[in-house]
Image 1 (cartoon, one colour):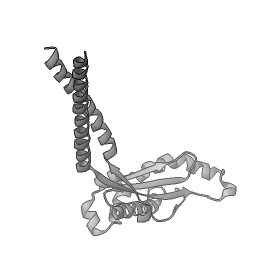
Image 2 (cartoon, one colour):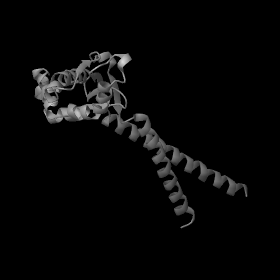
Image 3 (tube, one colour):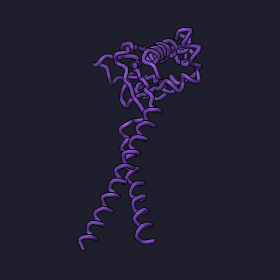
Length: 204
């Protein structure tokens, strides 16, 4: 009886060792893969306020309410090739050689919020200074081109220039998440291997 218990204990220990080793291997491989694929992107933002009358006392006058209703249209206007072309022309010669109008459309995003006269502009690239330069150029392009596209658009004001110190960074993929996933896969694989070895040795 004692011999059987000792044998059973050895089997459990051996299986646990296999499982732990596979978990470690899985975590290491997943971590190294994530590290190899990892990249950091930088997002810079600027806001443009659009409206005919921006005073608080007259916030609900007809012009301001009309401007609020127009914000979705202003968002579409900002994405127009005319604005993107103007944005590109405001960039340095070196950056113009790096970004076509189509490429800028994939870098720049425009957002409008309900009941707001603010158009949010963001640019995401692999470089802080490029993101800042592009978003500032886009904000200036909106200010310059909107009156040409719609003479009745009202006043357009840029709410401060984007700066590198306010740029947000995002690193993907997450090494921690991949390590957790690799550990879980290692656990599963370790259980399958240990079960297969035990079955093969004792039941086949």
